Length: 375
Ligand SMILES: [Zn+2]
Image (tube, rainbow, N blue to C red; front, side, top):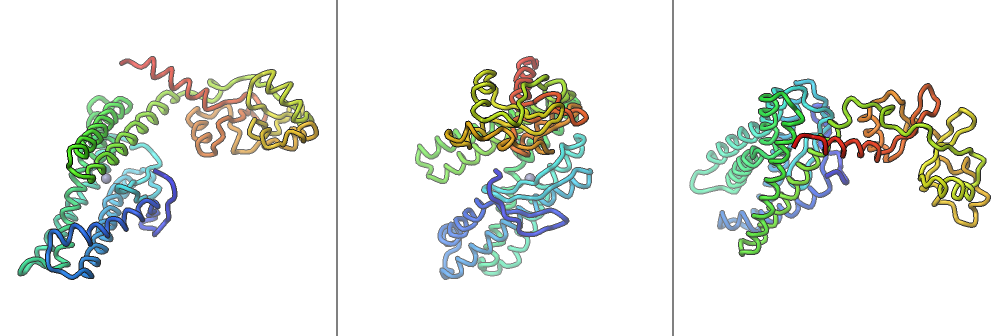
């Protein structure tokens, strides 16, 4: 879902970004509208007219999705949630939240704002299209009518109670308000999302096989997306839940095996890596933490140079990127690992090395917690 995105404009301090996949979809959709949909539904216009109808239709879709996501973002912000921006990608838009919603009411209004805006747009587009429909449809009226229908579909699809679709967020808000348990509510709502995703995929495959056409494959793609998004939201939630209230100090490996910087790479391989079968060693000088060395750095030294090159020459110096305080929360450690793609961090207390923590340590806790969770 991330991949390459281009920032187009800034609205209300939010970056409106376009994922590279959207450019292809925009081209494909303009073509499909100009060559397929519009000529089939509205006969008698020229080819050039169908093309501008297609292009205006896609621009209208783009604006509609941005407005839908803006509605989510602005309502979220009014409840004090920090919003990063909006990214348009393959199948719609994503409003990027930095925080979780603070309470069910915030989640409810934030979620419902998008579909409400889409319904309002639908009414405006359909109303405007009626103005252009004197004796049959004019090209512009036809495009407006298309956009009106599209916004209705957008609102209806998003209101399906399958997390993380808007309807699924509304369902989560309701469950959360009912039992007061955010974790449970997310779990139930995301399971519903996952089941819905699978259902879409099955319908798509069955439809395509029984001759309903290749457009049914869209259902499969959509189903895969919904299922993936639901499962990853549930996993994120489980992780956050499992790690809550735990500190780096609780989960780290204490007294890690260290290495001095004057040791050669050959010695490191034989006397540390093979001996202890660890992949990562802090580099220290007396009590001072200098950095770390791992298989990644060792691999980059050609075999014939390993007897001469020292650990000090290849180590990664200790910095804010690869160290964390023992008092920090386990979630912070996970955030740092994900943000810097370091799967192992040096743990310090008052600047001195006290341990090492890895993503495996965190995932072990997540796995154990989910095994102990009531079924
Ligand atoms: Zn939405």
